Length: 142
Image 1: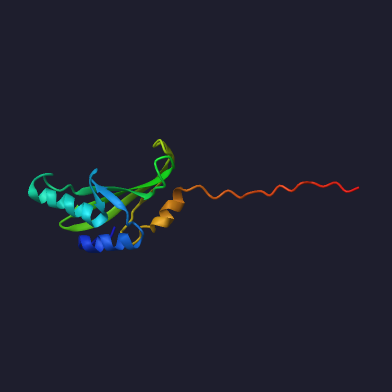
Image 2: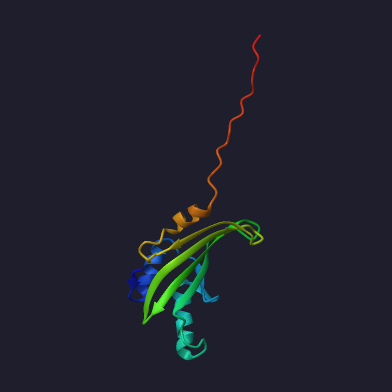
């Protein structure tokens, strides 16, 4: 695991890798990655949340095409110690429109630098494109 010294660098690297959607920190605080974490930490400083947890859970969608379509969800476990962020584990899940798990991939021993790009993470849980077979009509010759 590699430490990133501040929230700006941590969020900048993940955003550049395609994790630019909306996230929730600890199940609340919806917003872009940096904004979500900042709001959580601010509420911890104000006493609303209590002391900040040493491990934060960030959840968000990597792919969303509507309520009636399957989607890809991402969960990241980020250690937060003395103002530094360590990305340790990530789960990528593909679920159907009812929330039933279709496929899951778990990545461990990560760092913010080694985490796959968002498109690569989506590809890990996506079905391989089916090859279409071409049916030719058999013609009889006389």
